[in-house]
Each structure stands twice: as structure tokens, then as C-alpha cells.
Length: 428
Image 1: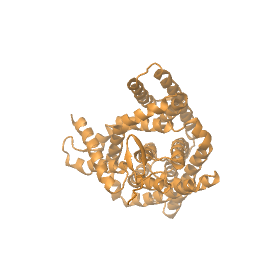
Image 2: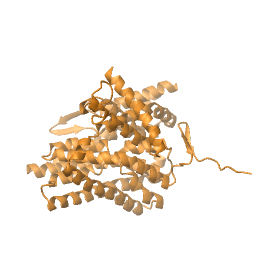
Image 3: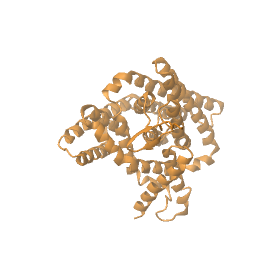
Image 4: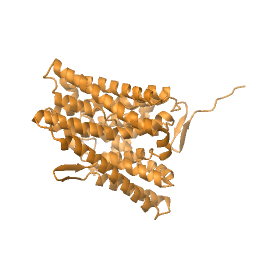
């Protein structure tokens, strides 16, 4: 009973908050996050009224299956952007920008935090600095996709953005695995090539392979059904299956083997959309079904944000350096790589701004980083940055897409059609 009441309040509260956000011209995703903060352990949840809000972080974590499922559908949707005709047109640009901006961000944050270490070694260790540098490369696909969907954004910038966000996950995984391996070596005095090189490559290859196989299975299964409702149901079943299977972890000959949920689900969506001739129609129906799930995902994400980190001056100092140089890295990396690959002026100018949101992937990396001696500091810095980026990032993404002319703000959004401007009114 308590769980059902909590979920209903999350859904209703998030939607009501989005109406207030609309008056302030803020994206709905920001409203959902604020609703989560209010329902979390540091606001309404602190009253400990049964069913009303979340009294502890453990209560939020107990609903993690909803967040994981939502991430799976988000990744599946983004995977559908990797259509062959689109990849032929901007595939090289997306790969170049995706790699370059991630590496540039990691390098800049590394330099800034290592410099902070040399200024005052007690502030942060070198191992924590290079780990945070790798975490900085991660971009949140969920917030980006929600802004794009809410405002029916469309155009070259939007298309490239969704491709780059998807590629960013794979690049970030490699950068984090390598950096974290080096960080552990610095603390233990010995380096493991298995941890630094083998495990991230194995994870990416296996994730892509598993996703491709499930995407093909989904296509074969869809051919047995003809009604729209049954095809929708089998699609939902396969995506949930993919989320579950991607959580498997095991060891083979001393090598840790796991899967990236985002990569597996993205690859499933990519294969499915390229071999299934009715995938676009089916995706429209999936999008309609998943809308409430995404609202719950962001409200729960807001409830997870830890406001206690704001009371620690050390975390605030390191966090501000992290945020400033991560933002600089994302923007300059995207700007430079877009210029090199011949992107239009609008894409070159605004893409970096749309890559600022950061959430789930970074928090997952921070959880792994707790094995470091200063793991708690790393986690709290990431929590602080996520708090800032999740509340500010979606609004900046919206503004960048408006400035690029890919959101028609003077129109009315409608769930059944693209956002179009009002026709001019002629008097007389």
C-alpha cells in the first residue's frame, strides 16, 4: 500500500509541478527533479508521514527497478536514432565529436584537479583527481531525450546530439575503466592490465553483441504478431528482458565480466530499427506507453539527490572546480571537433551546451569509485555536480535548441503532432 501511494504521489506531484515550470518557461524534466527533491528525505520525507514522500535514501533505492527499466527504454529509444541513412550522413561527425569532447573533458578536469592537489595535497589525492576526470566525460542521455521529446525538437543539431550522447556512453566507459585502474594502481603500488585494458573492452564488445542478438530476436518475434497492441506488448517485454539480462555479472579466468545497460539497450534499438520495416510506427506507440515511466524516473532521481553535500565546504570547493572545468571541456571539445569535421555554425556553437546534463551514468561510476581511499569524497563531489547539472542542464539544452532554431517556441506542443508556429494574423 505504501509503495503504491508513494508512486502515485510521485507521478501526480511531478506532473503538477510541470505546470508551474511551464509558467517559468522551464523544461518539464526540471520540474520532475524539483518534485523529487521536495518529496525526498530532506523535505516532505523528513516528516515521516507514511506513504507521503520518502523518509530515507533506502526507500528511494528500493524502487531502483523502475529507474533501471526507464533507463533501458531511454537507451532503446536513442538506439533508434542510429538509422543507416542517418549514419551515412553524419556518422563520422558523431563518432569524431563523441570521442573528442569526452577526451577533452577528461583531460581538462584531470589537469585542474591535479593542479588543486599540488596547491594543497590535503584537498584531493591524485587518484581521486584522475577518477573524477574520467567521470566528467559522462553525459546523461535521459534529460537530453526528455527535452527533445517535450518540445518536438528536430533538425541537424538534435540529430547529431542524440548520436553523440549515445557514443559518449561507450567512450566514457573506456575512459573511466582505464583511469580507475590507474587510480587503484597508484594507491596499491601495482598496475593490472586486466582491469585497465581488458575488462572495459570486453564489457563494450559483449554489450554490443548481446544488444545486437536481442534486437534480432525482437524482430523475429514481432513477425509472429500482426495487431498493434500485441506488437507493442512484445516490444515492452523484450526491452524489460534486455534490462534484466544486462545486469548479469560473472568472472571468467579471473576477469570480471559485466554488461553496460545503456549500451545493450541502445544496440537492441539500433539493430531493430534497421531491420524492421515497421519500427517507426511501433516506436511511436512505445513512446506513448513509457511517458509515465519517465516521469517516475526523474522524480525518483530528484529524491535521490543528497542535499547534505551542500554543508561540506571541501566538497563545494572541489565540486565548483569540477563543474567549471567539465563545462569548459564539454563546450571547447564539442566546438573544436565540430569545427574540424565541418559542422554548421549553429551546431558548432550550441552542441557543447546541450552535452552538460549529467546523472545516472556518473553516479554509477562514483559508486564504483568508492573503493578508493577517498571514495566518499569522489561520490559527494559527483552528487553535488549532478544536483547542479540536473537542475540547470535541461534548461540550457532547451535554450540552445531554441537558439539553433530547432524548437518553435511560439507554437503549441501536442502529443500527436510536431510543434509548429502559429500562422500570422492579418487585420483589416
